Length: 407
Image (cartoon, rainbow, N blue to C red):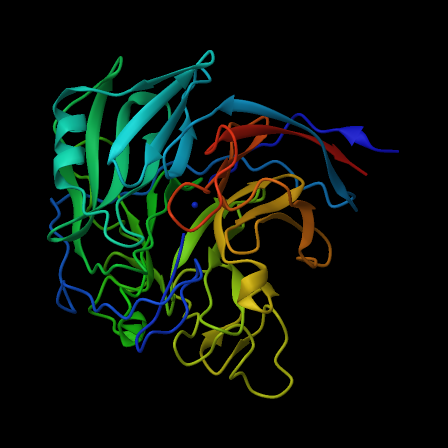
């Protein structure tokens, strides 16, 4: 018998792609534009101890769930313009980024209000919304709604900035990590706090595939940085695997970051032509781009989730890429929820014993989906039909809450 699901715990949320030589992007268009930031750009950071935070107590994953069904959809916000990410405050308000306008909205009690102040003015003035770039991911400092982090594309590259939030007013932004290579496509953009208290940053290969394998470039990586609202923000945690900001490498364009309740980290990633990926992220692992894509290019006999000859392969994949283009993801005790752009689908990926299952479509009537997010109790979806690539419907774009039943 199906049971109503209300306790989706410890999860997090996380766009689009293209490659050199006019390869097809994750959002389904070609754009060969090179990065305007030189390879090997170094982060502009302040020094700090980098001591890890206290580990979270991880509840169990519900490995008995064999199916998930969406039984209801409730609009929370409508008429959004090219929204990209959403995070929830402790009071239940949603903060939503609008990519092209470079603004952040507060959604509270059915009312949508644009944030103001020096920070809002600075974001709108600095954002470079060419192609798939712009104002992208958001993250609130755990336990402190007054400290907000944002990922944006600027003239000098992609950057993560910190601002103070006082009511609806943002302070002037302070750089946390800057100099991340940018392009019209493959800018990454998702940021999220892990159970260890550190901030994780998804970057793209900036349409230069080789950067994903270059150790001195921040492109095509997942970064892990200190972020506690102090001058230590942006410094290297002392246990990072390479002795720098890089947590994992060999990524094409990571758009989703989340942690399952047992602490397992997962990330969604756009493929080029063959396969989109859901990866289980391990510190120091190399996920193979551009040498491999999904299982394409792997040695005979390689299975999903294997690590072979130095490359770690996805735990789930979508073929062809038109069936998915996975963007933001949320993870709960039920498994992983993956928002798909070109596929116009919300996928559920089971997780339990013996591991990850095959992705299953559970929503297919909302158009392009940019993000799946959770407030710790429910799962929400952010649509993406108004950025010039979708077919807007009445009241698009929307943030909607899902009613889920599990069997």
